[in-house]
Amino acid sequence: MKILVFGINYAPELIGVAKYTTDMCEYFRAAGHEVAVVTAPPYYPHWSKPKSYRRYWYQRETVRGISLIRCPLYVPRSPTGLKRLVHHFSFALSSGPAMIYAASRMQPDLVLAIAPSIFGAPGAALAGMLVGASRWLHLQDLEVDEAFELGFLSGSAFRRMALALELATLRMFQRLSSISPRMVAALKSKGVAADRLLEFNNWVDTDVIRPLPRPTTLRNSLTIAPGATVALYSGNMGTKQGLEYLAAAARRLAPGRPDIVFLLCGSGSMRERLRAMTQDLPNVRMLDLQPAEAMAELLSTADIHLLPQMPGVMDLALPSKLPAMLASGRPVVAMAIENTQLHQELQGVGIVIQPGDVDAFEASLVRLADEPILRTLMGARGRELAIARWGRSAVLSRIEALLSSTKASTLSSELSRPADGDAEDNTEAVRVATTVLTRANG
Image (cartoon, rainbow, N blue to C red; front, side, top):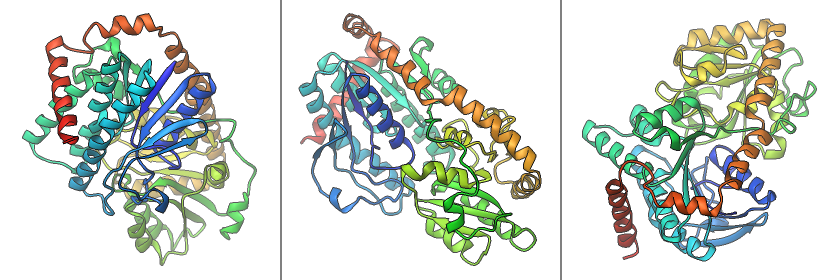
């Protein structure tokens, strides 16, 4: 098949959605498919573009045999709610014409759009319609719900308008998928027909991410005492991660339990604030983002993985780092509301507490630090779960087989019926998207 992929994040970004989109594209290419990508310059999680990508126009490059078009966009230094809107809208405006250009040249069988950002998804869908390609939207986040739940956006009227535009966008695609059963159910509740929905969960290469012997070289280089318990947070340091809970727990444990060492690794808008909150604590170490080839060692340096979260996001975005954490054979202390997807996933492989409960967070760390056998048992169960549910080959081969079984004749017949709802709804969605793209091109 010829597959045109749309998504704002791609390599060389190291974490988040980029690593999954990149890995998926390279897997499809290795399976014999032709793959091209329309994306943005790398900027995440630093919210800054590298010097070689700081152009104000489109850039083309080939990465491991995959042709990329990098579209210009606005990247705010401090991503507030309004600035995030402008950021995503700027990519929607620049990527729409690029998608139409790429689709007209490639004539793909499938247009696969990755959200975030859903702002640009109408342009991707329109490109697919214009060349007769099948259209698939994969949602890593439910961005609209998340933005209002976290307070980035507010207002009941604004929310109703945003949800209406979101639904119009969803109806432009014939297939929709997301990364957990709860997120798939949320799409169904928005009005998407069940027969168009699919769970396409994230994955981990369990041959690469695996338990390594202790102590690691990294642990020794950080001068962590042999008997200490390392509690690791690794990933994006943004506003929704609840990193202030880590700082509070580290400060409370510093006097009486210096043997519990917090290792904080990552980058993002909260990094400097987190550094300021912990710089005087002897039980905290901070690291920059580690390259992909060092990830197995980093995760095995931990005795416990930390997954703080702000309330309101648990079923809207299952943390993408979770499969790798479990594959490393270490238990997790996480914040999750009871009966949410994350709460269910961590049963028996970690300790789950209510978001914002620093007392319970501290007690959980002390318990696991004092019970190494419990840590070992939970870590082993987590490793088994990662292999069974999130193994890279199992997940991607299933999706690749689904793509390969979709013949050109099937694509043509699918295009003859509306993606969801009635034909009038879809015609209106196409009209709105076309108007936006036309205005963007002057």
